[in-house]
Amino acid sequence: MNEYITAQQIAIGKPILPIDRIKLMSPDEWEALIEEWLERTQKYDSHKIERLGGSGDMGIDVIAYITNPKDDPENYEWDCYQCKRYDKPLNPSSMWIEFGKIIYYSFIGEYPVPKCYYLIGTHGIGTSLKKYLIDANKLKSELMTQWDSKCKNDISNTTSIPLEGAFLDYFKKFDFKIFNKVEPKIVVEGHKKHVNHLLRFGGGLPSRQNLPIPDIEVDKELRYIKQLVKAYDSDSDAKINGVNEILKPYERHFTDSRKSFYKAEELRVLTRDNLLSEEIFMNLKDEIYDGVVNTVEETHDNGLKKAKAVEDKAVGIKIESNPLRETCQTIDKKGICHHLVNDEKISWVEDEK
Image 1 (cartoon, rainbow, N blue to C red):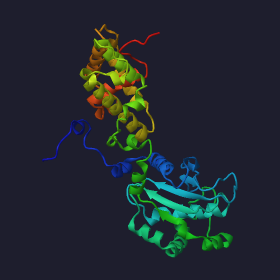
Image 2 (cartoon, rainbow, N blue to C red):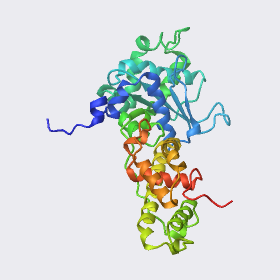
Image 3 (cartoon, rainbow, N blue to C red):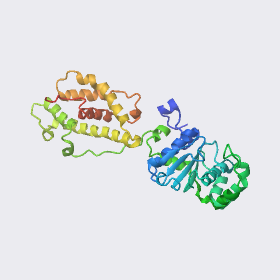
Image 4 (cartoon, helix red, strand yellow):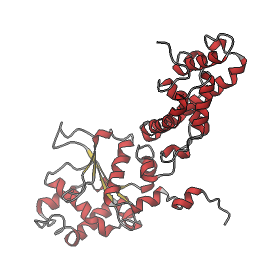
């Protein structure tokens, strides 16, 4: 066996691919995943997605409103998503009743006929059912044949629903082309845009995007820059009043400090863009602060020696529980020190009052 084995694999085993993980989800988790997927599609606004599910759902698990039902309660437009968590691909036998529910409940006016009705199964759609979904006339004919055995006494717990009279006329005119499917791989791929994707599927954060370091004129008024100038001034025999006066012995540290500041900024952006929250990054900053604060409060010969001591202390901090521990690099820890300076949490040289 030549495959490289990581420490994480030894601790928790090989990762489960998302397409396989959904097969382990409960029905509620599967419905929640579909709701989240729809929230991140460009097809609907997120506030127009509503999860129903449970008993009495009348054949609807997740609704995606196309128009506002409050504007026209009887004729609003919507799409229906029926989420099935079965241990095998969906087959016609298990779905006849679902088709029947949509037809019957729209007939009695519980809701308008959906523009589209999508079946989504954790294990996908079986070949036989796919053939029915492709051929609307064949689907209508077979559902009519199966009605008495699969739908008549099972749609409602209180009444039998024979396919006759006005309902039969409605059935014959019903547009069976609304019935369609969505493959689970489409859901998994689209769900990558949702804030909960990593929480549901793991897999780690993606590669960070390199942030260019701007020209010094852009951020020379930032506090961490001013503090670096003060630190160099406190170490130098010659007076240093601004970034344009930084002497050669300090140029390497100044360049590295700016680089580390923006590397930490990359980490912040990475969490914001992939988790839609900066809380995890803020927690990491708190961990670094807790680890360096004693060093900050110690007596140092000057601001530069203090800055270097704090940077060295930060580098040695072991990140235990923060989800960014696998992504956080040495340079990030140094950069977070400068973020803390910028946030006025710590200083290299105390500001004049």
